Image 1 (cartoon, rainbow, N blue to C red):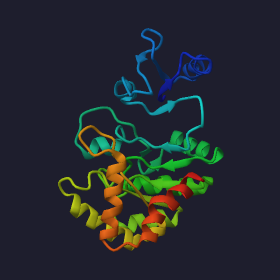
Image 2: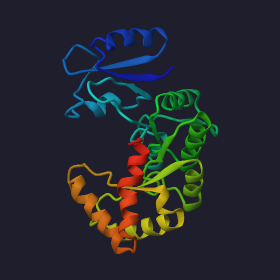
Image 3: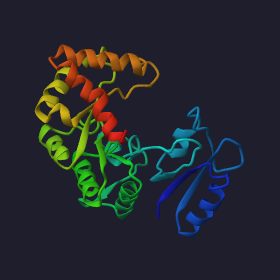
Length: 251
């Protein structure tokens, strides 16, 4: 069965959920800030311990106070495509097998549709990304995005991006470190792909926040300037940076 990480597994809801999952045959990890309370010690607020707790996890159940989340990402760093593309020797999480989405993935997509959430394809391969958005459309998901479509390890080509757009998905273009090595060439490739797909289907983001890279606001500003320098109008940039993301989130 599936390996599931439950955050807050020692709280009011978690203590009811964990035994239910175990009774159904799942392997369960419990994340807690208190040593000895769960199987793994970690903190969602600081990120401490999360890498160890999430390694190889197929699904995560979390409940936090306040406004509920809006986006459900398919596996990213632990995706099978990410691990295989990087020739890494570590556990991974699959979303498909033999050219078909796993039944559990279809169930998750059904929950996304039922709750009006956003389906993000994560670090899935181009073929998997298209399977995900097709299934999302079939089940009535209203908000979908292909996670950094041209960036490693996704690498969708223009025809694949156009197909995803026809299925109702936005295409995310994550600028990263615009001024870093290869940044100018990456911006050129972004501009070319966006023109071929159409700004009305595209979203600009950063994928920043890592140590050693620019702060997200600075990187995002650099990305917007780079797109303006490559001929996109202020209205087109505004649409990709503000209007399309708001539409994706249902705002």
